[in-house]
Length: 394
Image 1 (cartoon, rainbow, N blue to C red):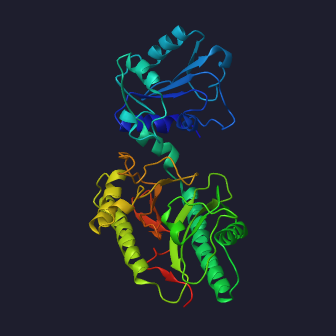
Image 2 (image 1 turned 90 degrees about the vertical axis):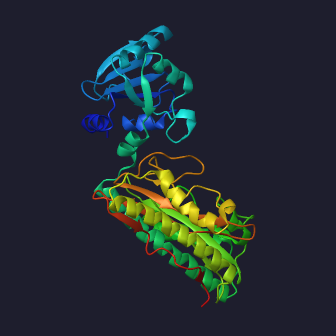
Image 3 (image 1 turned 30 degrees about the horizontal axis):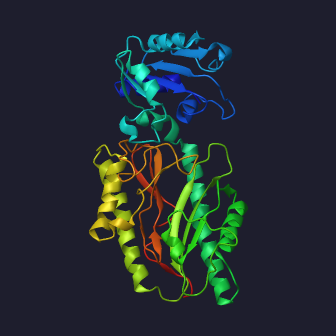
């Protein structure tokens, strides 16, 4: 819900004169969410909404959609011709020096950078300095309230127990020589979710052997692999409660379909787990010391462990992502690889920590969720982090 008082307080905290929100045909979903626009509220013309650090907001809308921003406070300017639009933008930012927009120099963070270069050029032509709005977005899009935190814990209980259901199913059926496949186990997990009142935006990853070496492998009927004794299995799953504003839990665990896990799996897992734990330790130490912490710094701490072990080229993705009402949320990502995420890790935000090593014959990932509460206490959710590859037939 749009909260002008909170937004203006945040602008003052950040030392900004204002925040210019802009959208054209739904390209800037972040701006739409800040204003509380419904997904079905699609507009065909450009609109601007300027929130000053103090005072009344100002709107600029097209004549044929003049009521488009009537749901939020502020004075209204209406344009028809493009010349009127450009003059109107100048009027919106008049008297300001430093404002935020959904823009990042060099498109260094495409998760935030939603405003096109031409619009940025237009705004800058009025003598305004534009800074990224990433940390502002986090405050209103990625920070959880107490109800969301409780729903995350509820979801985490069921995502964690889904592994007991899935791994137990594999063990029982392999012992009985019943044929099962990756998609069979997928269905077991989805049935478990349905039984426990949680849901996912799409099916989990169940990856056997070489398939586990593909971080985004998706099993499909007719193309999936059987699961037999001697196989290595990676399961990545995520779900949230079937309630309004619910947020996700997202976990990955690995197992071996046998009585004793081969050393090659345990050795690689030990490196991945050490990297995971280094990332968690980085977050905990920074908040304990009251030090600002950015997403890329956590990624670097994690990645250094895998690189030191000689497997850096096999860790092919960022360490983690923001978690929210979508499994990939709009807060800071734990990323110094694909982007240099300069957004701060803020209290009341959640993110995954999921390092991996992906080899041609198998891949290992260990994923947990980390939440920093309002008192800056760091929580790791989804049960105790996995400490070794699970042997399923003991």
